[in-house]
Image 1 (cartoon, rainbow over the protein chains, first blue to last red):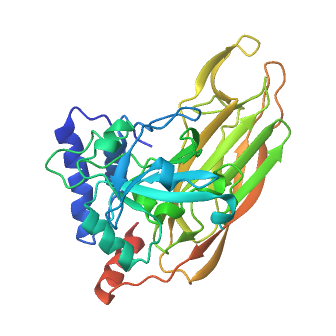
Image 2 (tube, rainbow over the protein chains, first blue to last red; image 1 turned 180 degrees about the vertical axis):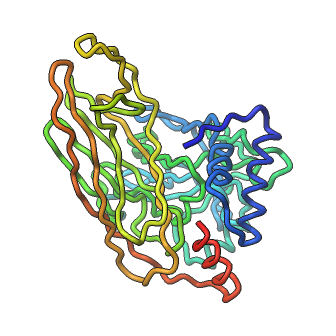
Length: 89
Length: 263
């Protein structure tokens, strides 16, 4: 796998757009375009709290508008908490 | 299935509550979808993806991480595949890998001498034509190592290869190896020891019949200690995927077939 380096945000954006335009047009995406896109979106990625660490407190509205926190979300065995991109696209 | 383990599920995204409500209704999602509009909690977790320019719709997304947390909020395990496109099956991902939770995400458990490996898909479901992620978690007994790359002749790097006509392309990403000097060999070699995890991708052929697809594969490695090297080994295994029906317009089907035939 080629390791791409990105000088700045503009280069990452260009890599993502190149990929997105081909894919949205239903055109073949060359392997290197896909790789560059994946590396641009994941550059310097972070994964948050480590096993053994406590997660930050949070209180967020769910789809019904009810505000939820760990205390009322978790079951007796805990909570599987998923951070994902978007439900919209 | 999760309930009997007392485990609940919740998902966080930067979408507005209305978007999540529509999504939950459309896909009959019963678990909480949490709206972190403005990405404040995403930042608090340290997951804000700084690669997204403010003008992009993806500005504000998190790095896609899943946590299994105890009722008291302590992380038990976490799971990360560095590619958003592997997220399609959403929250079904990776559950099979978390602690005592039993879930039908396929995992092969291999053991050979001082090496144990769990290789699996984060979800048991996929579509023909999809690029799916897989992971492998290795645990080596103390004093043993396996190799990364590049390597001089005579050593075998750790690799996983899926076989058969259903896989068009595959790629394995190994973590950064440790460079260790071996005075007896007169070489400095890239090695992995202890526990480490690798990730890979498979591009599935399109079209493929719906239903179960059994994917044969093999793991290759060479296990060595400071003093002794075992012969290279190849351990075959197989992993199942359930292929869901692919709903696609005739125009898109034609474009997809053309693109696959060119790749």
